[in-house]
Length: 175
Image 1 (cartoon, rainbow, N blue to C red):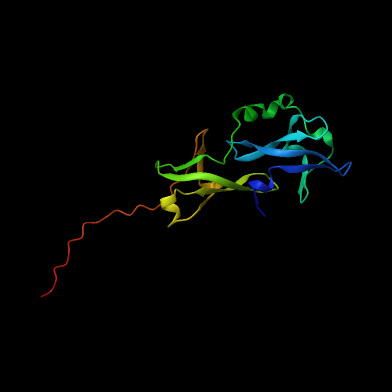
Image 2 (cartoon, rainbow, N blue to C red; image 1 turned 120 degrees about the horizontal axis):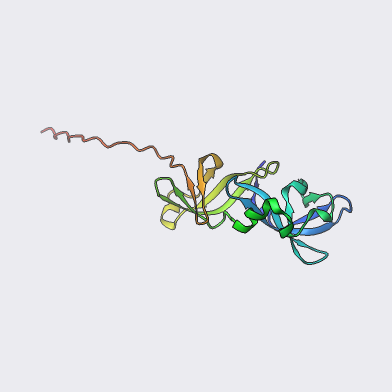
């Protein structure tokens, strides 16, 4: 079952060894090329520091939050070399403009859903402009439709089928 971004943001980090809260996962660290949550920026309750919790250290997503072996699962951001480039990018989905490969603006990303087992972003929810939202409502984009992600926008495959217009001569009115 997919989880919305609010279910993986500002959640407790629980130690399996002690059974107590050791921190709070504040915000996900997203890999823009793989559209995957690689870890979280977190707050250590013992030192008060902002640390990083890599997804590889998370044993399970439980109703109480993220389950880790122990407090040692959280580490200094500079110490995680394999995530350093992704941390430097600081990519966030919410607020990004969503456009099609034909340059048609669809709206802004307001939420996303992840698979809790793989932490891959499977769906992106798009808020439409006011004039479009009255007739069309909210859009949901599947990860298979996403072509590219940049610092400013998310580009998706245009799924509209263009029908060529044909010249049809009007039928004269019968008398």
